[in-house]
Amino acid sequence: MKVIEIGNKNYPQKLLNIYNPPKKIYLIGNERILNDFSIAIVGTRNCSKYGEKIAKSMAYNLSKHSVNVVSGLAKGIDSFAHLGTIIGRGKTIAVLGGGFNYIYPRENTSLFKSIIETGGAVISEYDENVKPVPENFPKRNRIISGISNGVVVVEAGQKSGSLITADFAVDEGKDVFAVPGSIYSNTSRGTNELIKEGAKLVENVFDILEEYPYFNNIKK
View 1: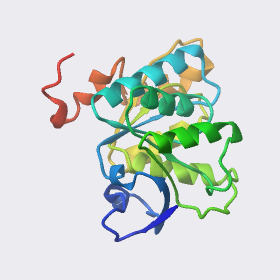
View 2 (view 1 turned 45 degrees about the vertical axis):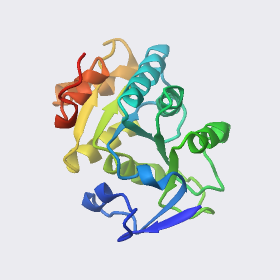
View 3 (view 1 turned 120 degrees about the vertical axis):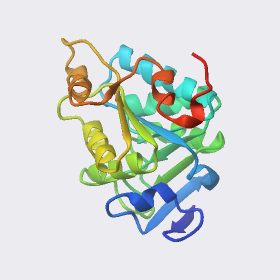
View 4 (view 1 turned 60 degrees about the vertical axis):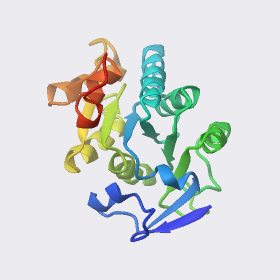
């Protein structure tokens, strides 16, 4: 484990522009990727097969364009976003809501190891002995959005924590993208509402990358 203090050259520079940037970042893995171009993929823990497929494929295809994928190592969409990146042989960054001695959920311990083994990074603002209590996760979301250049919400209910991440992204001046879903699905109510409020509707990674000048020459 490494500790990167604010002011260190390896401290994620995008975090300097968020509300209450963490004074320290605890890290296991590849610190060199923290300042690279990244897109967050977030969503509900109780995702559908539709959400699983989209999270995996978007993460996979972003990785093929050398885009790092950021998420929260939670069940559901977060896990599939990390997994899709690993399958695509890309780099993914997981942001925890507790310390490294309390990987949550416990069944994602193997995914945690895979992220590190494939050149990714796991970070937290909490030291290794802090338990992942519920109030830590909304705070964690400001780091997920803060370290990213944009945030994609794949599936979200009306009270999903991923909507908090989207709100942080708006406050931080980041791009917010949302994947539409069925009007009959509870897990699409939040994403459909985001689109109504001005989030960009996305169907593929090109809908995301075209918003950034660096990727203007990429063909669909």
